[in-house]
Image (tube, rainbow, N blue to C red; front, top):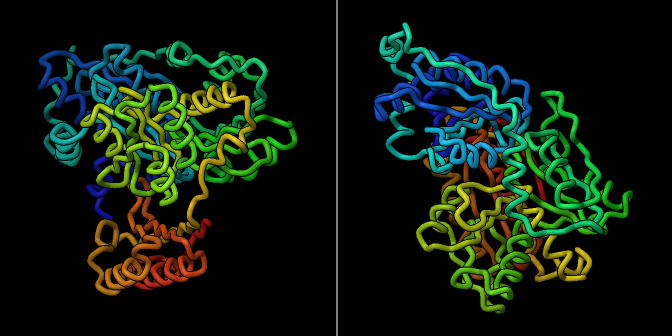
Length: 459
């Protein structure tokens, strides 16, 4: 795979060291610093946060070196959720922020998310410039050296500054609530304890001992089984699952049953509408939200605005365009108000606040509608078919055929992951057996023509 394909609209992603090398990370840091220096005509201030995967520490060092070599000052935030980097970039008056993470993916993967001074993801022209200069042989010659070398500062209070900001945004008083928090051995593994204890919850932490390789490993939003077990064992009122960068939040009820991102969005939309806090009675959702959600929303007078493409940034863009204050996805990303990214801990706090005020059990609160049966199949892509799988006639025809057969009673969504070389096949509809057959047909075709032969099945 060409290293240039590591740059996506959401930043840089790929397998650490083999696809995303330390040299590439250094060059990206240098490129960002050079571009900002030229635009600002002064020394830029760049914040750098990371998750707990084994490659994140060395990538942080490489990016910092690149920044400083081009005359920018690097401020190291340490291990921090992505939302924390977004918030502190704005609060600290930085010119840019970067988060070194591969979110919900396994430890072999890593990447970078770039943030602008307002805390929003860098997009468009500046990101294209960073990509171009990263792979330019001329970039190194643009570094003047001498006294034009940046310094490194370790922001020792970064995590507390982020947590204190979250506490100010949260009205919840959870003094009588027992909650299990699955930290996914990721970026929120210490911030979560500070935050949830700060809002009064009696918490039990699990998967909060990262070793560099166990991030997202059979835990967090990728696997709710250990959380379900812990909730039942601790007789907790609810369980919260975060992912590796702390952006996603899924939950389980007091019986250990999973609560999807669709249901989380529905609970929040319903509560905010009743409290007259839902802007234009509208919530923005990803295309992957279950079809049952749309039916429920219509029956309850909630307008649904669907993002044009799959991905968190499209939800945020639609929210900004329409001045809406709630957005959500099936995967557990939830965005509030003017926030520039999703924050799993804030999402959990808002849901727990609704639970506390409702005087209901979590299983009762989440029983808003019956989702359509859904299957998700993940096909690892061969390198040569990344971004090109749609050009394969046999696969294109099979997808079209299955979509036509399910029209009116279901649907099929096929998309490539933005953070890893995986083709995701999502099929849902009224007839569970029929939906499964069509999902399998597409998966087999994909595996035969563009895949590596492995299939990961999730019901």
